[in-house]
Length: 125
Image 1 (cartoon, rainbow, N blue to C red):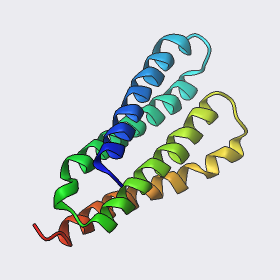
Image 2: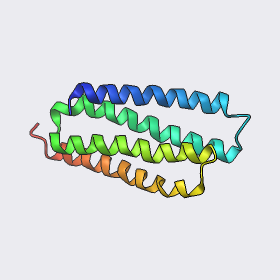
Image 3: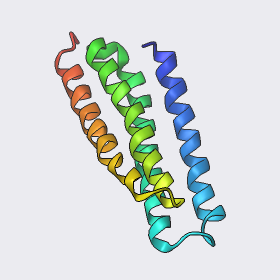
């Protein structure tokens, strides 16, 4: 995975997190319950954190083991899509069964951070 791709993904996901955060705060505030808004906010928080993790990975790319770095990047992207995506859906009234996807995304976040640690440990720098 090229550094450029990581930067584009990280920047794109970060911008989207800001848009979704603003939408939750201003567009959904009067339409959703406090619980649903809290769920939305959690999705945005993890979304943004892991978008920044992609940018961190891009900055470190030359210093980490590329195979493990790629594993971390894929885990972060899939984690955003599955964890945050499922929370956004739940907040908007999707069937509760969608909640079963969130732990898969959360596990991917954890695996991404572990892969980043291994990438650093296996680096030649």
